[in-house]
Image 1 (cartoon, rainbow, N blue to C red):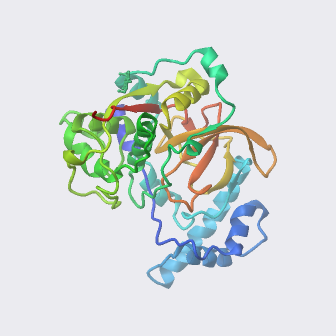
Image 2: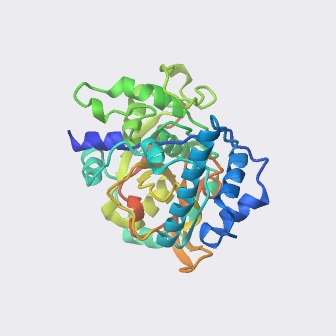
Image 3: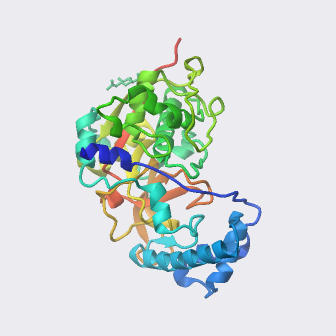
Length: 375
Ligand SMILES: *[C@@H]1O[C@H](CO)[C@@H](O)[C@H](O)[C@H]1NC(C)=O
């Protein structure tokens, strides 16, 4: 099988967020999550699980399923403690996904391993951005965040659907459109989930096509958008979290895509920062291995295979010194918008250590430009 086909199948994402409600955030669970499992007050897994079930409104089919999920939850507490040891600047603990086994999580998260083919795919299939000069990189601000400038929509929730690639794509187009027009529009992931494969898929490259809730690639999606005419707003084509019949209406296109470019990993993180500041939020892929248990802080895992990127997200900013409560205090970091709802991570965001391609975050970075609105 072509390696690129495997990669196309690999880019995915996730997650059942059953009726989580903000109303029952009690001090109890907050204490557990905020303190990190390694410093937890010694609560029994049963008590933590009961709080988790309440907080996230989980309904299991009966006592057997409850008992099974409790065992999974307890195992995930142990895994979070292991992650904590490997990633001491972040906090790992109870998350909205603590009742899923790693296999369940990854089945929705990663189709296939990308292996070492990320670079070949990125370089081989799209134009590279003109590199920034050393002087431009040196002049970049020490920290930067597109959220402060109004270029980023609220955190969205993909649900139990491997559509991370669609959220990463819309995030990049939303940002590029904001830069071009000053308007922040909330754009439709569902159009990509339902329609992307219908336009560009040849019989030859069928496995490389984007495939709704079964994964895709952001750069494929830009190509689709250039061919189909553009992207509708979410209000016109709302998210359902399941693949459906394409209901794209060219008359209701809100944003047209002009072109897209790769930001080569070889340029290092300075080039990525330059592209971020110059072109807006960037679509990136990374290895999500530490994200199931991530609660907050700057994630800087000692071991996180960079060849295995499996999750599409949106790079929106960077900082110079992220404080982490645990030892090894300050790290430069990326600010990453995820699509697992606001209850995950830092209000839906992930901070990942910057500068050494941790979890492969530098390896598949792309920028998009939107066409100017018609006069
Ligand atoms: C991409 O599109 C933008 C907006 O139309 C344009 O300014 C830019 O020159 C284009 N870049 C490339 C490489 O074609």
